[in-house]
Image 1: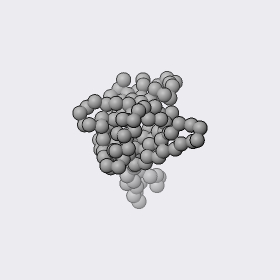
Image 2: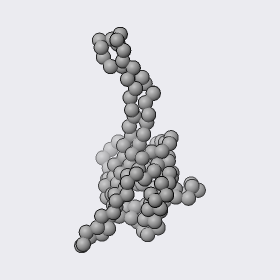
Image 3: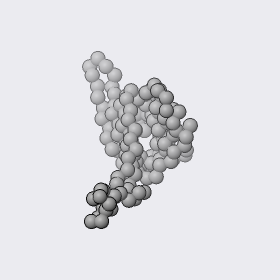
Image 4: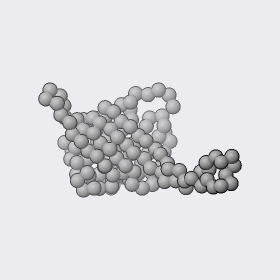
Length: 137
């Protein structure tokens, strides 16, 4: 993947379940993490006493974090209501020249910050809540 502008990574949500995704905010920083847990199957006869892992057995998960400014009052309301409802909504992470990762996520943290002479900003954390799909761009 070639070098890219960080602002090109987009976070979108389908707030109604109808398949229409809208960009929720102007994110200034973002982080997207894909991870898997391992299953250790090492035993007394493992060659050279090296750890052995069972392929394809660990749990996979994804997390998204970002901070920025909400696009508008509707975006703020959508995210805030999803947090208070403990809702699991379908989100998209669009990574240019890579692909689109889509699936159910739950908001696990929502923080608002404001300075006397600055704009109100927010920090958002999402955790995957089901199977994700990947579509290459």
